Image (tube, rainbow over all chains, first blue to last red):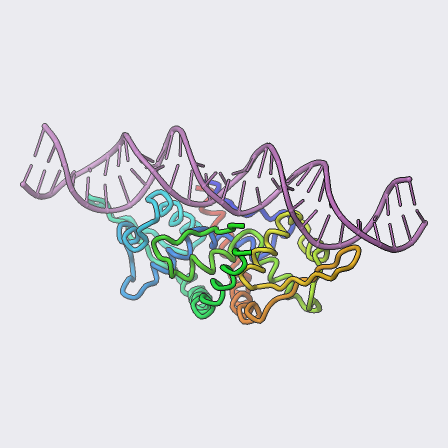
Length: 124
Length: 124
DNA sequence: AGCAATAGTTACTTCTATGTAAGTATCTGA
DNA sequence: TCAGATACTTACATAGAAGTAACTATTGCT
C-alpha cells in the first residue's frame, strides 16, 4: 500500500495538495475521461487498454487501484474464467466530471494559443 | 530549455496531455492560486516564497518560468538594485481561474469523504 | 498436449521531477 | 569594509513515478 504522493506538512488541509494533485498523475484524468465516454456504463480492463493504447498494463492497474482507493471508481469482479472485471465511475466522480469537462473545454479553446506561446518561448 | 513533461505520441491533440497535465505538477496550481489572491495584483518573487513557505527557490523559479512560457503569467523586471521582478496573471489565466476555483470548491466539499475512503483502503 | 484469453503480479530498470547547497551580481546603509 | 537585500543560476543528489518483460491462474478449444 502507501501510494501517497503529495506530502502536506505545511498545509495539511490544502485541497489542492490532498485531492487535486493526486488526480494529476500521468493517467488518472484520462482513465476517468475514458470511463465516462458515451455508451460505456461499465468498462472492462481490456477495453480501457484499447482506448488508451499507450498505457502499460501495470500503470493501468495502479491507476485504477488508486482511483478505487479514493472512491472515484468501483471495481466488480465476476468469478468467471477467463476473469471478468468491470470498472465504473462513482457518484462522486459524476459530480466532478462537469468541472473536468469544463477544464477540457477550456484547454481545447486555448490550446492553439498556448502551444504557440510555448514554441516561441522554447526558441529563445 | 526543453521543459516538456508529457509526450503525446499517441494523441498529439489531446488537450489533457498538452495543456492540463502541464499545470498538474507539484506547484503550478498553487502558484496560480497564490498570484490570484485578493490584494495581490502583481507579486514579487519574495512574496510568493513567503506565501508558499515550503517551495524551494529553484522550484519557484522553474515553475514561474514554465507558467511564463505557456502564457499564464507575465514577468516584469525593473532595473533596480536590489532587483525587483513582478509577476502577474494573464487574461488567459483569469479565464481559467473560475474552473480551477470550481475544482477547489469541489475538492473542499468532498475532502473529508475522500480521505475517509483513502484511509479505509490503506488499512486493508 | 498445448495455445488463447483475461486480469492481473512481481522484479527490475530508467527517467524525470524535485530538492539542496553554494555561488553570482549589484547597490545601500551601518 | 562588509553584511544585507533580491532574484536568480548551476551542479549535484535523490526519491518516486513510470516503463519493461516475464510470470501466474484458470478454463475452453483444437
